[in-house]
Amino acid sequence: MRQGSLSLSWFVLFLALLSATAVAESATLTFKFKTITVAGAQSTAIYGVNNAGVMVGSYADSAGVQHGFSLSGGKVTTIDDPKGANTYCFAINKAGSIVGYYVTSKFVGHGFLYAKGKFSDVGPAGSKGSQAIGINDHGDINGNFGDAKFMSHGFLLKGGKYTTQDVPGASGTLGGGINNADLMTEEWIDSANNVESSLYNGKTYTKINIPGETDSYVSAVSNLGDIVYSWESAETYGGALRHGGKYYKFHVPKGDRTFGYGINDHNLIVGAYTDDNGVTSGFSATY
Image (cartoon, rainbow, N blue to C red; front, top):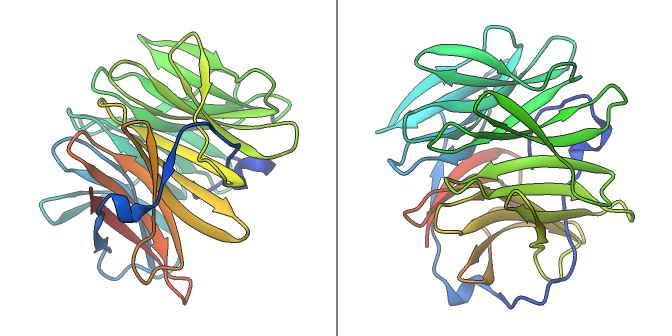
């Protein structure tokens, strides 16, 4: 679940449809979980991780303000875009460049790139809000934006040029993760108002929904082709991993709702979960 708002009404939604690919329960693949929290924060979520194990995410302070941050070697560094009232960091590449979005006092989201200590806005010209969700080691960025009619589209920013991504037949598309081969994950709304997931190679959109679930929310894709998700079915929320062509569902032990967000090439997943009291904490999991 992506937190925050672009003032696009369906951004609170997520994805699904049946797939012929086999599904497996987590018992067939071992996940070892670790809870991650920022000291003194009301809530913590981890959204991305690079191959060096540096994580990024957001936390809410005692006043409920959301701050972006990075976590490296146990050290938390707050990363707040000066233009925003709230900041969310979503992905980090090997060079330490971070993408995410900030939300203004008027509740409009704008994507950003934080590189070499400087912030720059990310989003096509004329957009009515944007989110930068994924960045690869080449600096290519996957994200989404709202047009003048507040319809949502995915985008790829590569070499300074924006390319719009729209899944055929979708009423809205949300760009997500991107790997070094420019394979991109896309969430989209179908004609039944369900959320579905696709993998886009620049030419073809391939459905990669979690079998049997009402909504599948695809997030990041590793350079090895592993993909992390969240899913929803009958008020149940969980995470999932697509590994070796199979789907493995997972839940944080003693957690209420689990959301999978980020992945690297060393079998490490990051995300967030809520406990029985509704408190959100981050997690990492090896598999």
